[in-house]
Length: 105
Image (cartoon, rainbow, N blue to C red; front, side):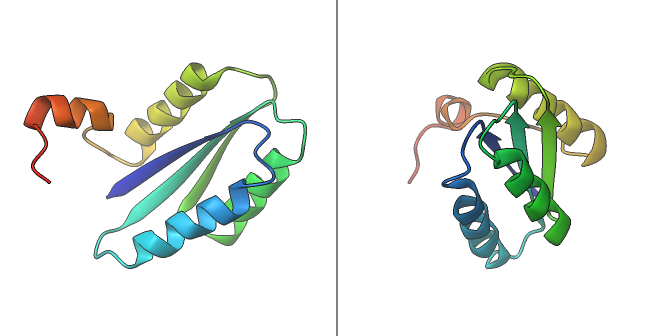
């Protein structure tokens, strides 16, 4: 399973199109996927957009916090959810992949 984490704070202007694009591109793959929107303390409607996207598509998960957590803590909360509920074995950054396996592309 592919899991994409999208941190979002006051991203109302771009969030819906970005998530729809990610979903469309991932549907082309022969692999199940989830898109996790981790949104914290937004004041411009980002939370409502994220909630609406999640309600319309079971592959989209909205992780909300009322208060601003900052990018690091928001991502950590999302990854904890992913590891607990989606049974993902590994979460790593692109930088870690390159440093571990090198660039073969």
